[in-house]
Amino acid sequence: MFAISLGEGAELRPIEPWQAEEFLAHVDRAREYAGPWVPLTVLAKDLDSARERLQVFADKQAADTGRLYGIWLDGTLVGGVLFRIFDTATESCEVGVWLEPSAAGRGLITRASRVLIDWAVDERGMHRVEWLVSSANARSKAVAERLGMTKDGVLRESFPWQGVRHDMEVWSVLAPEWRKAREAREAAGGAGSAAR
Ligand SMILES: CC(C)(COP(=O)(O)OP(=O)(O)OC[C@H]1O[C@@H](n2cnc3c(N)ncnc32)[C@H](O)[C@@H]1OP(=O)(O)O)[C@@H](O)C(=O)NCCC(=O)NCCS
Image: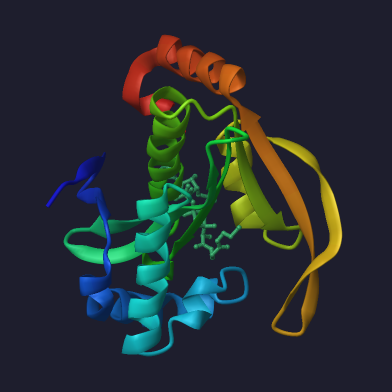
């Protein structure tokens, strides 16, 4: 019902439990590509568990502790961005992302993440936005860098997933840094350069 344009036929929209069927079809297309890095794309394995995952985020949204949005490309759900953590007490949140492979390489995640971070910083007074990523996940680390985040450190072997204990890198951007980088992007020349 409500959509934010990401350009080039892409939109960011809410995704809710009633859309479980569409969500599951997308996760089926994303599972192999995103599963090694994003538990959500493995935990949603049938209609009930897909609905349950969406309900977890609907509950988080109601409690103002997290949110989940879908990315549609030419009418097909191809990915998502979420606040896994949204803590208004510490003014700190964590963004998570994924795509199905056909939608990669177009800047969709960078643009969608910017929408979320702008909202978190400008509307909700978040001071710190985090990005947790396995050291082995080069594409996700590239997004964190593209977003102007700084690598804070590594939580060594902190995340056991699918038989591997991942070193998890913590990246972050602080509100003043975000605003400054945004101003610099805008000064450098509008949508083209802003898109990167
Ligand atoms: C992580 C992931 C979402 C990144 O996807 P992505 O497509 O590389 O990221 P973006 O949408 O920001 O697109 C960036 C790519 O599009 C290109 N691009 C094209 N137009 C662009 C634009 N206007 N703006 C920015 N990038 C653009 C960039 O050059 C880059 O391509 P490159 O890596 O070949 O140089 C994706 O690899 C994925 O889903 N992986 C599996 C799940 C996962 O790891 N999630 C993160 C867990 S921490």
